[in-house]
Structures are given as structure tokens and as C-alpha cells.
Image (cartoon, rainbow over all chains, first blue to last red; front, side, top):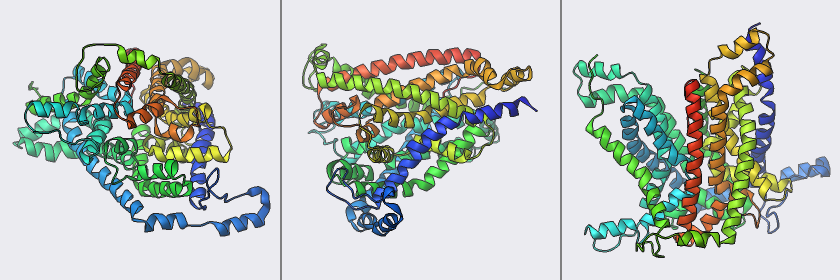
Length: 303
Length: 270
């Protein structure tokens, strides 16, 4: 018997504790979200009608099933506010992800072309903001973008504008915040694939007479597609459900779904509708989530 | 092979602009925290005024203390569980429920926080758990153990297996082979995982807002409620302190990864 096989058994036992933890605190809670999304809103604490009471026996369970209602989901699909919030979340996520790719790619490309020693430094420089507080980085932008903030002062001094421009509470500010916060997530996977690429391939193409643009579009870009996929998913999925950035930087006239959920939960105390919103959000993200998982598994396990 | 400079002018410009974009806002925030003037627009000279004001703010101090406690305990539990999970995935070959297991570990990395937060809160309410320190700690452990697992798993994947196999071929029991051969080799990744878990917990607003109870606000919750009311110099000061703390943590982590790179290939995929 090979050593590898002897090791496999105790290694499998190592799974027990984290497995139980994740089932209990990650999987089971989704059951509760589903359950409460199907129950009626009530003015009580907690603010919903109980759906299941297992102590009451079989008839009670049957009655409970009969009482399940999809009213919350009907509300979500009939009320324009929610439909609009989902659409806005998706369009913001698509736009922001495209911007991130456009801005992140040249940076990752530049990093991959640095001398090896400098690559390590650049890598650390990209990771450090990722470790720095998300909230603080958004707040830093409020400092800059507010009415009498730095940006307006600079613009006024340079006579580029004659009066302060409103930046805060606009979509522009929100996109700046999203791009700023998620840029490391886009750069890192892109850089990882670009750095692994054989430089001889690009050199061969240009030696054979391909102009730089053709080298990029016919050789470099297609080879970097796995990194593009990882970066896009890593940004797109969380941005759809983003709450903090649109809440602090965007205007309040059109909400993203993360904000709607937050509002229903904390302000309106309508837990069932918030839960239904979460279920729909999860359903929207299911496909990208599965894609992401496959990518992650391939990256970590098939080497 | 001909030696050509692969770095074009376009490459240099995009790197310079990119890093300026990443670092300038934080730098500006740090500088303004030392501004003597209350107005953000006016530079009134260097001063520690806002730091004094900060230390007089009881609520802010309490929130910081709560956040540090949560970050410390959740990072510690998460490191333990995440390392176990990484070992199972990297060395356990195939086992029943493996796909579900890895799925549960990878999904929280990108799952919108509003979903994770809401679902955990509903669980805690159903269990009738008193919300506060422990519920936030459990919630943060659930999120951050996934990051630890990924960091440690990638280190385990790049590790030469022949070392631990040699130990076992020579008759060392698997658990001992792990403890005396594998564990020292992955120790830097475990340290980096702990640090990452610590900073993620210190940073989280959304999940903590859902899972905490009245009277036990964490630092991000506190900062968020202040920020909603507008820019205040004290917030610049507390943010600078958090950045300084994280800088120290990163410094230690990079020392740890230096140690690791002298023993082999460097880890840290994140």
C-alpha cells in the first residue's frame, strides 16, 4: 500500500469538524431563508408567522404546508420597485465588471512584463489594498468626492469647472467606488495567467511579422481567457449583491437589490420579503456561482 | 535569445496610473487625519487633535474592543477549521460528499454578504440564541474559514508530497508524519490565513450588522453610522489607526511568507 493511501484516511477524518460547521452555519441557514420567504409577514418579534412546528405532530405539519404562501414572491415579481432593483443590480454589475476588465487588464499586463524581482513587489502592492478595510476605502472616496472635497478644489483651481460639480450620490461616484474596491480581484487572476504565459509565443508571432495589435488579439488575449473568466466572476457575483458602495456613494432614487433587501429587513422589518428577495438573488447568481466553483476547484485541485 | 525590453511605454503608464489610483485616496485620508482644521477643505497644519477626540469617544473605544475580540476569536477558530478542511481536500483523495464540501467552502468567497448575513441571522433567531459577541464570531468564522482553507490548500498543493510519503514509508504513523513533516512546511500559509481571517473580520460591516444584537456594535458598524451622517475628522483618525494596525499585520505576514519562500515556493494566492 502506498503512503499516499495510508495518509488519505486520516486526512478524510480532518473533514468532519469543518464539514459539520459548514452544514450547520452555511447550508442549514438557507433552509431557514427559504422557509421564512414562504411565510406571512406579521407584526411580532420575530416578525413572521411560524411555518413549521414539529412538536405539534403530523396534522400540524400538513396544515403548515397548506399555509405556505408564495405571496412574497408574487410581490417581488409584481412590484416594479423590486423588478427594477434586480435589473439595476445586473446592469450595474455588468457595467462595473466591464470597466474593471478594461482598467485591470493593462495593469495586470504591465505587471507581467516587469522584471521578475519587481513582479513580486507589484503583487504585494496590489494585495495590500485588498487587506485594507473595504469600508475605509469607500470612506476615503467620500473625502475626495464631496462638495468641497479635493477633486472639486483641484478642478476649480485648474479652472476646468466654474462651480463645484456634484459627485457624491451619483452613479459616477458609485462606479468609481466599485472599480476601486474590486480592482485587486480583477488584477490578481489576470496577472496569474499572464505571468505564466510563455513570452516566446508573443515573440514568435511578432518575428513572423504580426503587428503588435494582432499579436495581442490573436495570441495574448485568447491565452489569458481563463484569467479573464476568473476575474469577471470574482467581481460580477459580489457586485450584484453589493450594499455598502451604492448605499454610501450612489443616489437614493434607484436602489440595487442588496439595498432593497437591507431596507426591507432593517427599516421595514419585513423579514419574509427580505428572505424572498435573497432567494431570488441566489437564483439569479446560481449559474455564475456554479461556474466559479468549477473554476476554483480546477485551479486548486487539478495540478 | 535576444534581450529586448519587454516593458513598453504603455505598460509603464498603466502601472503608474493604476497604483496611483489604488494608493492616493488612502494616502489623502491619512494626511487629513492629522489636519488641525475641522473643515476638510482647509489645511490648518499638523495636529493630533482628532486622535485626542477619538480616545474620548467611549462608544468608539467599546466598538473597537468588541471588533478586536471578535476578530481574534473568529480568526483562531477559522484557522483551525480551515486548515483541517484544506488537509481533507488536498490529501483526502475521494470521499463521500466531497463535492458538496468543496462547494460549501468555495461559495462563501463570492456569495453576496447580504445573503450570508440574513441566512445566519434567521438561524440564530430560530435557535433563540442571544445575539452579540458569539453570534458575530460564529458568522465571521463561517466566512473566513473558507479563505483560510483556500490559502492553506494552495500551499499544500504546491508542496512536495514525497517528504511526508518518505516519513510514512519509514514507518511513521500518518498523523505524526503530518504533525512533524507537513505542518512545519505549511505553517507560513497557516499564519497568513490567520492574518487574512483577522483583517476580514475586522473589516466586515454587512454580516456583523445582521448577526449582532443591540448594544454590541462592532467598529465597522460604528464607523458606518457616523459616515452616514457625513465626513468627520475623527473618522479619518480611526481609519488611519485601523490602516496602521493592518499594516503591522501585513508586515508580519510578509515576514512569515519570506520564511516560507526560503523553504520553497511562496504561497498566498490572494
